[in-house]
Image 1 (spheres, helix red, strand yellow):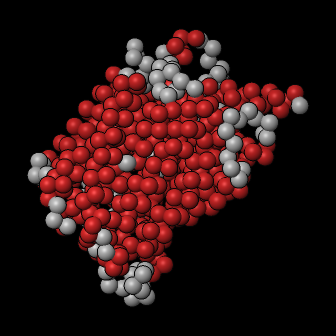
Image 2: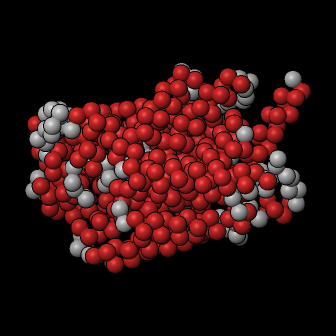
Image 3: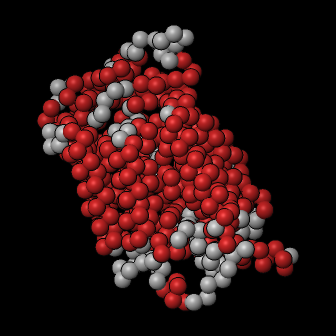
Length: 469
């Protein structure tokens, strides 16, 4: 049972800065969440499923994201709060369902920037700037410290920095396309020798294609986080749907470009083991100068996603804390209306994950598992609310309705299972976090909820309407 917390000072200490972002900045934020996926990480899927296996993963996971994002766009227009996915599931399933959705989002938004920080170190290694584990960890620590400090300065400033960094990264992607396109050879996509039970098209068989699914997600991971900026948007009911749909369109185009051209220029076998795929592809085709530019500019893409996912994780933690699901101290905001405690907590956890795991691929798998669980719950929330609350005010409606999010739900469940095929220990670890969270909720959190937090009030209003009807 939620307990009311009527003291106005409670919420005065937990306010975000409203009106800081229009739909253009939100679209830039959506692209920034994901753009690092074009520079590193996706190519490891080739080592599991071959090029075609990864291409199938791109299509299936792209369809999952398209369906889920369309549902999220509708829900964000009806429930425009920082809680986003947690708020949607809270309305559909009650406090426990809301908390588990929010926790799954947190797993994604803590593990993904941790993974990206290792990719940043790899790119600096390729430039000859750092070498060895100790220096890599210093780079990771510096990333968390510097960019968390920038977030604490203010959301408007942070979002503008994110937009600028993302533009530089986009220029690097265009330079990559121009540099490798003349060297594209279709035969290079299928140069991996088939394993037992495999074929030229799918060298590791159907099982390999299934194992590649989590890497197809890496082309889109995080775009659903745009609604986390709802309370800081100028017109959340209209700007959030526009921002999330616009960013999805950009990401499909950029993902297709690197998927075809990187392996098509160098060979799938080579690309499957590259730590800096776009840079290595340009070097292979004899464009070292352009490779150097893309290496430097590519760091902006990694930084953009790192920077924006830290933002997303802090807002999800802020919302859960403000409503009492997590310790309330984590939602306190300072003079600049930024959740400093949540930002620092995200940074400390992320850095410790890198220290103890030292494996960006495993961290990707953990992030993907958390993401898939949250997508399934958000899709299910859309289906439930479409049926139970057809009268809910929505300024945007999902084409295809519940059928669309039903497809997203099925694909999210398949992708969640695939994470156990790819990296079983990391998927089990992520599942364990959710299990511990469920116990924590039952033992503590459900007794300390704040009834007049925004996400709780949305649910309470509906409960009151149900009683009157």
